Length: 386
Length: 234
Ligand SMILES: Nc1ncnc2c1ncn2[C@@H]1O[C@H](COP(=O)(O)OP(=O)(O)OP(=O)(O)O)[C@@H](O)[C@H]1O
Ligand SMILES: [Mg+2]
Image 1 (cartoon, rainbow over the protein chains, first blue to last red):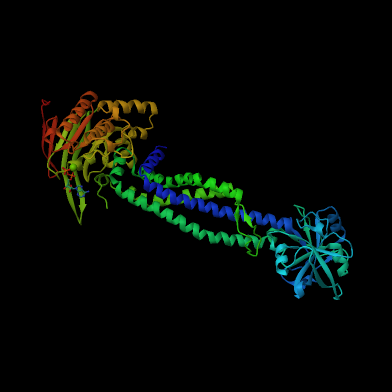
Image 2: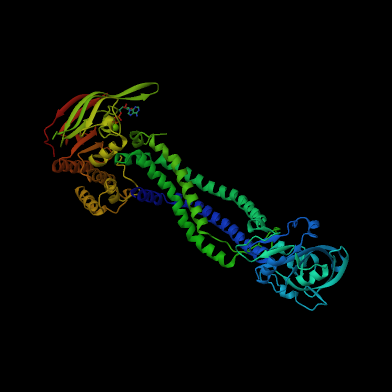
């Protein structure tokens, strides 16, 4: 305890130099928390949005369904069967039928994925109630990205052409009844949603689906369906976030390194300049190792002050950011990313950052302080050690 | 109880210099009793500081033995030596060596903090020590605000606060004017007489010598004269 008091006094006594070091370190501290808080916020929002718009608590796929292979999609569907039917009726499963199709907006030709979704579903946020309408017209909803690439607006009509189960071409006009705004490219890009029932009729299918979205948090095994859990479905997002994290580490590392270098430098200088003081400590009854301890604590305490200083301007900054968020203006990174990201500061993030900074500062303070243990106290008292 | 607080037997100290040795002390044999007021006198380089450092367990003899308060200096571990200094030996330096970031009070308190003394007892002891040197009104000052004489009085208080058995004072008056020197010497003399603390000085200051009750003369690392003087000064 005495050592802490001594270290604190010495540190405060050193004045400007201490505050310079502490400022740089606190900046590194705040930046690390800020960056990782943003990434975590993105991650949480991204997962949340993807779940709400696309995957809920997981999906069951037809064994041949391959997201990346459009040719496999044609036949990758099967009958729901009794068990699935019941779960669908209970509102726990959402059947989705997927087929390739073509639209002709303004005379251009564009390949799309046609998705049939029950209009009364509530498992996904898709505004499927806009798909309701009389039998003679075909309502469709699309996302903002799709609307942009096809240059479609609400109430626009566009020709849709598809092949039915026998491979026969057919065409019909669809009406865009709603353009939804979501941050999940996977639920939007190149996709047009129509009524599940109508799609079955158009294709000549009966009660078939390509995949099933489940609302159930503990999904059961369904015969003939491959279950894809969230880890699998969110892997792309996770990878992107990991890579962004990795990119941030360089900047954070450099900043932290500069701060630590400043502390190291201060320690070396202070041990050199304070030899007499070191000798005096020994004369007053400290062992040399205890003096090493005092100097180590003194250097390490930079980090405690940095945490306090960081809190002084960091907490208001973080709270403010938490209310306004950070806008990325619809930056399209090809992966789920909200337009405005709200950082998420977990206790774990704050604790681990604090631990990292304190540990690092203590280590760089200890390294030069070790020299004291080898000092001859009588030489130190003379202040002559080079 | 044995009254010999310091016993030096055939003590020799050599320092490595280049690829040889420099012998700073040669075959020193001395005994000091409890309550002595003794001085090591001699020209610069005669080995006074070296000898005080060994007695204070800051250094060890190369040959022979130094026994201080029953402890053989060469045989003490770092911890034991630190304990000995903390509890029983006070140091006073030519350059005061006060800790600059602490107040007068805290400087004096330092040794007691290491002894885990209660805050109450510490306060009492510190204030008493400051009273001995007449600085109770400066307890909150920082060393940088004090004159040289006042700094050395703080250093005396710091060495005395733990009521040590031995105080080692290395040229305590070298940086002081004559008025301050006398003041300090009188203070130490009083403490020596009232508390029975053994004082060992190193000096070549005539002012100091007139206070000494025993004058041990060193030259080239050897004791050349050891005389007890009648304390008829002041
Ligand atoms: N660590 C050391 N290495 C080499 N030589 C040393 C060392 N310490 C002291 N000496 C030498 O030993 C001799 C005695 O030194 P010491 O400091 O004891 O003298 P002193 O009597 O205290 O002198 P002064 O009156 O100038 O303080 C000197 O010649 C000094 O150069
Ligand atoms: Mg000397």
